[in-house]
Image 1 (tube, rainbow, N blue to C red):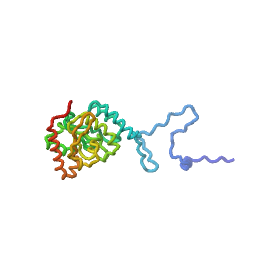
Image 2 (image 1 turned 180 degrees about the vertical axis):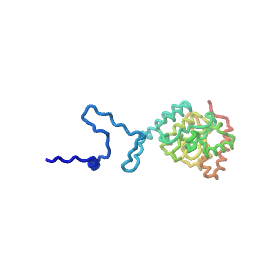
Image 3 (image 1 turned 135 degrees about the vertical axis):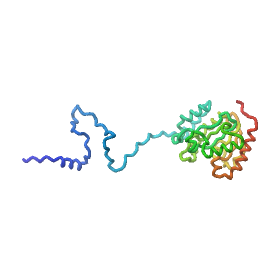
Image 4 (image 1 turned 90 degrees about the vertical axis):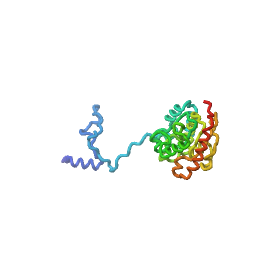
Length: 277
């Protein structure tokens, strides 16, 4: 019986390729039944040539770890429980730094808590930080902030005379409007912030902060210029709504109405303080 001829190396390689074998794992054959197995092959070093992907496309980037979402009602309850226990503005800020109930925190650069004088008699509250505020970590530092400074200066005020904050302390992505859920989650913190500052006068800037804090459905055109009471639970604070500086930049014709509101604010500041502490 004539033995079959041994295949050549080229024939073996052709056979392996046909069978789907396209790479060699080891330089030498390994007896997998032996107890003395070599250590696992190390990955190629950075200097070694890398095989291109089979489909010609780069491998997909690793997926980020899944973020655990908190149910809105749970987040609102957690915010209420935390905010009411804050004995000072410093503690309240620390709570917001560690609070994970609002998804805006994960997309913002940093917390935008407040600016100005915590002992001020007057407090301004806007809706949410913008791009410049997100970068600097302070409210009203962009174009609208410069206009707010001019508005305050018109009645003899500067930043060290007032306290400035927002209902939402984190910038929404792309400066989009905060959702009702995001607003309700952040609401207990700004309410506690107002209680701790305890101003004589509260000024809400724009429609969102006015409707949220003054609990009205009226638009800013109807609600602006009217003094109302903001009840903290222990004290009633005089509150006035006016246009947001960003709106005035888009619609300068309403600056005349805003000037009337500013004159009303200046007159209210002439009254003695109603704070007991």
